[in-house]
Length: 349
Image (cartoon, rainbow, N blue to C red):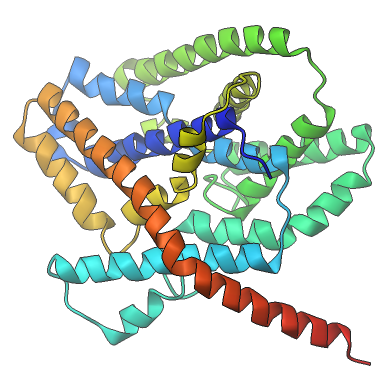
């Protein structure tokens, strides 16, 4: 698949936004210093988070837009990517003072099973495994049948899940949410028929108004109503979050430009998530960020944190190309063996 720079730019921006969202939810919200604040510097992170809470849905909309075409090579590649950073971050945790455990070291090689955390990794693997069935079903649906499926998914995920907290999808952190958004992405790719200039105009207007309104409602609730916890607005199965994700995604589909540099950087985007949210180092990462916020004036703290994020972000993006050099020979060999096994199975009588 030829990479489209407009979509790759959206992927990079979404991943960078994820850093700020995790900074808010994992470093600021648990912080006594932040909780005790009032006024602008307590509201500022809420506004930032309201602008950066859409990235997971956007990632899956991208997958749905292009379609996931699962092969053994892609599954092997995904495993090696996750296992590499599982092992690397475990070794980093040893380097910063954690004690070595042979059991934990072995677990770091098993990102899909024994290793805790990385909910998105496991959910995306399930989506990859079932994508061929989903794609075949979607290919045989009429537009009206597809709309019925989407309506059913809205009821299951955003009505029963978000509003009534049914276990099938009570917070948007699961496979069901990814399947839900993947189907939306496929529908947009197959059935959206709007002239590009009009789509760009209206999605730009709606994006600005909707996200601004999102931030205002969040601020108003946090300061005056106190009806729900602020984190409720971050749930991915929230219809409003989903709507904003779709509109922003569609706006980027209307932009046309090509950049080899953007495409090169975007290859390492997923590594940014894997490293900073690894169970082996995330607690140290988040506690240090919280310490920076506690020890400095909020304005200075935000400048320092932003600088750390920029260095970390581009550092990991570049480092992942070294990782590719290391894992590609292993990937090719494993794929070769896998193809031999598949051929032998096919030839069984």
